[in-house]
Amino acid sequence: MKLDRDRPDDEIPTSSMADIAFLLIVFFMITTTFTATRGLDFALPEDDDDPPVVEKEESVLIEILPTGELIVDQDPMQLHEIIPYLKPKLERNPKKPVIIRPDTATPYKYMVQVYDELRQGEDHGLAEPINISVPTQREIQSFWY
Amino acid sequence: MKLKATIEHKPNIPTASMADIAFLLIIFFMLTITFEVDKTQVVLPKTTLRYEIPKQSAYVSIDPNGRIRVSDGNEQSALVSAADEVLSMAAGVIAMDPQKVFVVKSDGEVSWEKVDEVIDALKRAKVRDVYLLSDQRTVTDG
Image (cartoon, rainbow over all chains, first blue to last red; front, top):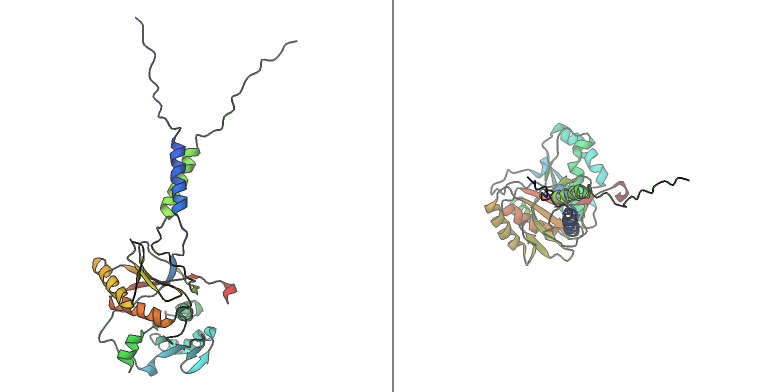
């Protein structure tokens, strides 16, 4: 009896796999854009029609002029001087609100600079995060006057 | 004299691991890819603190000329004429997903008044989580 030894090849053809894979790589390389996907979190308080009333005297007011100059509680101040100024006040009352109030013409970057500095309060030796408030113009007009 | 028989070696490049390397690269790109929903060209403000923004966040961008564009995080950003349109868009997005994160991508030179309008619109739309997109501040930035 003659046995048939011409068995078909049972290998999976993988020669084109690298071609397909590199095609996919090229697609992903072209479509990928490395963008800035990091930022500063800015949790908004709930829009309350009856927010808690904060007396101006109880809070610290940081005004930002269009030139980037800072007026903290009526006194001109440098950015790096804010935390040392706040430290004794916040040690007495850690919940003391710190209000950032930029002028409408102030470039946005100066507001972000101050907000970033205040957010680093704990790195500068404060026990608790600073209670930062950035009221919008509508809120200022509705509740401050 | 006895001559050595010459053994011919076929030249070949070992390609067995090429597919493995290629698939490794594909997996890397698949994990890192984020489809950009907003292509507005801005010079971002610089901050020391920067946190990773969740993927598929909604975007509100303000270009140096004060033009506002919005995106729900899935579709490409579209130009809007006023901050009130940001409110209606944000309210719609929040109605679908109350936990939706919004990103404010504004040029650093834009006046606070413009950004304030956008943030106020987001507040009124009951948005809770907002990120201010920024670049890394370094020691040389002063």
